[in-house]
Image (cartoon, rainbow, N blue to C red; front, side, top):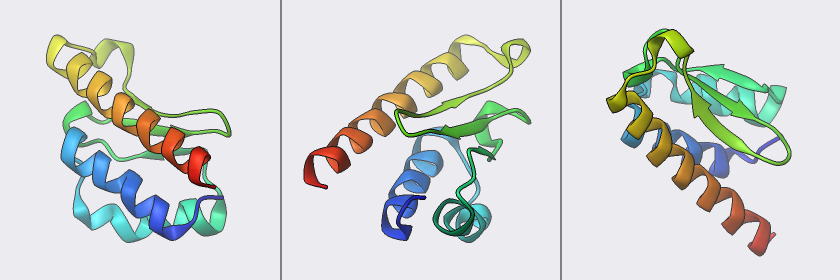
Length: 94
């Protein structure tokens, strides 16, 4: 499970990079900190299949292959870079 403050930081990235709706924030924080959800569909700029995937090793966003376009590829790349940096920072600082 992810601590609520970290879940908020992850969701900040989803909002800023992927256009996720703020209306989903409280649900996201709950699913990550209480339920330990491995996938979260946020849609946003990645379309209906825009999801965040959570595992011990990696946090990343993706969308359906059929929905992938150059703009969406750039969104995914930038968001995943920020998610990777956040995960690395958390690992370093406990």
